[in-house]
Image (cartoon, rainbow, N blue to C red; front, side, top):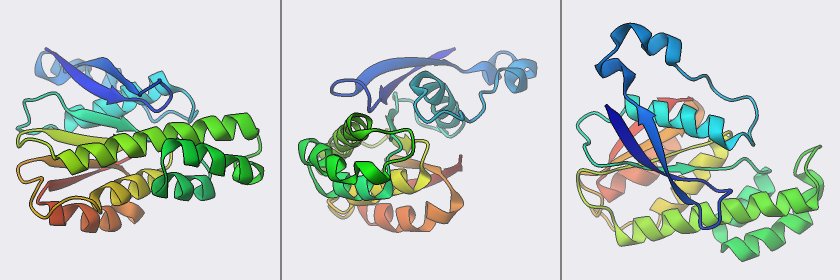
Length: 199
């Protein structure tokens, strides 16, 4: 059985493309462990992260039958993440230029700017989805190399949710337990069913 995910990847322009994942446990119980993807070590390996996050989403679908919306949140420095959370993608890219010196040993200004712009796009997309609301029976999931950045993006987006507007929707946070409580507190007023998956 194949399940298609709408995977929002920060690197792509506008960030949307389809991703298929096999539901191996339904027809080949013995091969699930062998086919299990491991957490990628390279934060820039988008394909590996798609596979890994899709697997976690698949495991947490429960009764959801609609294709889930999966958001890949790229890894950037904390200062760039904070700028992107509070601004549009364009302003986030500008903020990255000032923060490029702290964006990581291997990241030059162009790379930091690109990552910040990508993060800004994901934030904008999640903000739009939360403001427009999602129909019951759907799932919104988010994860990426940095649990703290993913948490910040979700918290920022759900500050704009109307109370009860996500009733019947599952919101899956894929991250670290240290960030779970803050994301749960931000999501719950929307009425969504909050789920956490350890990365």
